[in-house]
Image (cartoon, rainbow, N blue to C red):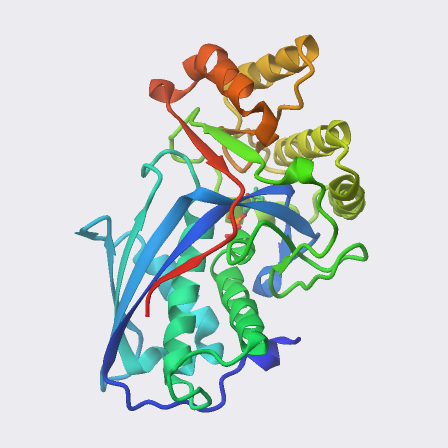
Length: 369
Ligand code: DP6
């Protein structure tokens, strides 16, 4: 599919008002997206586990209006929020071609996260995907080609709905396009899997039972404002001395992971995933300007995980996103022992001893239509 396929040609603008609500999860990348071209096109493919517990719940109320221009209010966790507006304004501008009804309505966007605000957990993936899904549900209602009961007619239109939701979410925040579905989602053209640069697609390969219900405990190391935003970090991959090799490596790691998912080889999984996390941070440390998002406690946790693995037969490993928090990944059958290890040995490194237990999930859910 091309971007052209997502342009809505005609719609029924007689609907005066309505309300839709979605919940959409966060995701954690195993092969990282770091570096993008114009229009949010990734420089390399990425793959992520969709999460279950960490999610954004967004309700959009839309009311017909006459004047021109975008009009919306944002209510975050029960209070009017001005800080999110510029990002949503930019999002609307980017997607207007694909959602021509945006200027016909005033939107009240009520949103909240299941994870604590300022925990350092990025809410852009869950937040932008939830909003994109709400807009898709509105588009579906306004659509002139719908069944009399207003329901989606078949699998094909469900597929279109998910792809367009992911396509729109990508224009809000790249990693958000991997949050629509679960459990493993690939984004970015590559030779190993079915893929697109425009939207995320459910991983089409075989997945060994070892990876079913995989666990992710997020250790909240630092909630501080990030020194450098992801958006700036991505830009710093332009002209980065190691960029070409890094992008090649991501393709290679995705191909390797595909084989690992089929075979259930947890040792190789650990190596690929940890190497990806450290490579992501190595790219930050070797860009110009350079920066470090890990904190001393991030490193202490990594060393503790290595020591634990060394002294047990555990397959626990870590990954990082663009911040200091550590995602501790492990198979479901190690849940009890690893949670004990986290409680006894890692919780002390977390702010207020806080961590969030999560696991792989199936994607976003419609809550009200
Ligand atoms: C390190 O998706 O937050 O988490 O597209 O500029 O919104 P923008 O960036 P964003 O970048 C996330 C990068 C990452 C790795 C990943 O999720 O693949």
